[in-house]
Length: 388
Image (cartoon, rainbow, N blue to C red; front, side, top):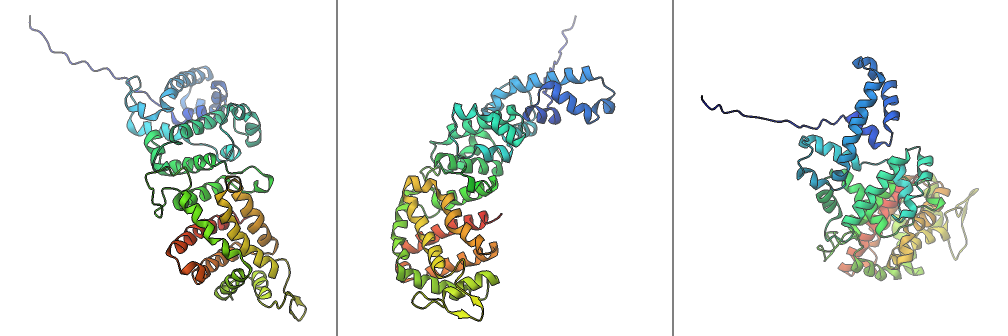
């Protein structure tokens, strides 16, 4: 008798149904998912019965539940042998697991990631119309990401990508949320309710890029960019003299010169009206009273507020109110005066460039660097949040 060589291959590929997986992520129970798929016509498409569909969904849900412990620590996915999943499918299910509803994250944003707030997600679910299970998954994912990266040195985005295997875009969004949460920014006040999740992400990423330890102008790149560059914040104190009356007058005049003829009729009237003030009295041209909603005093106030917002970043409590200050002290008065977003953009650009001609700034390289770092972020954020 001859011994025969036999090769045996056992396959154990795990098939992930993307449609069922998404329903699971969205927080639907198996019967709810079956009803949704039934309404989409899946029974007619495959000639199946409802019971067969429900049984298949239950099988999928059991696999997803077992996979979840791996999804909570994505690098383990490559190390385990229980589930044989194609690398492309692994990327898909990890990315999908950590994706979130912007409306849900907007409600969570800025809050402590505590058990108490997790237990209050019923209100979030009702307000956003996102199933409670999905709200809890998103809350828990954020808490997990925050817990892992909050004390890590280096880039937030890089750390999140390394430890959670997320795409650059999703990692950047999580980085923004972690930054806002870590610095305890106020985001839930009524007057901030018009701001979207994307508004906060934009502003936070601007701060990370220019104001954190990862900024190209920071001398401590190896530190955490979940925190502000304290040296930079201290340097903003040197800008305080810009809020003195004579400095404000000079800065305002330089700004008006640069922006003259480029703004809307309403904004131009405000600026030109402010430049025709003599000894606190207004000059009238025909029937037009140039010193109206944003005249001399308020233009001065606008310039002063921009400086004061920077000075207050040195104090933790004031820093937390950054978004409130931007809305109250810049956005609201300009909006009431009829300025457009384009007006704001041009004014801030001219205001920044005018600062370079101020002796108090131009005589010091460090002052120029601090001014540019500060105005780059403030300008970008104000333009972003200047909408209805």
